[in-house]
Image (cartoon, rainbow, N blue to C red):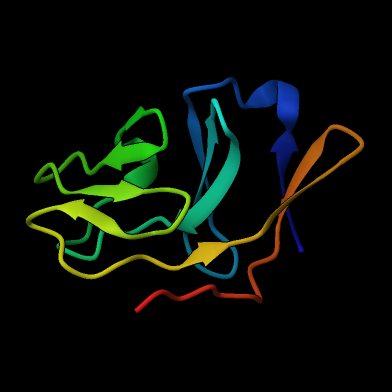
Length: 105
């Protein structure tokens, strides 16, 4: 388990990047908290630096978009999904289980 931050430190509509063991982006959406691989599958760009609208994040480099709930791309140029990770909330602190990759085909 990786400690991400206190829930108070991640307002709704924002994202944070954690670096261990590899970059993971954690998003706070109106539906809850979600974690995905931070790197766009189209080209190396941080999804945590992208634009979050609802449960969809747009890559800041070439505007590929992903559903943060499933990791699935929702438009070109991305064609491959990103892995998702379970997010756990305990006593006001967010954790990501980076050992469990929920890869989608």
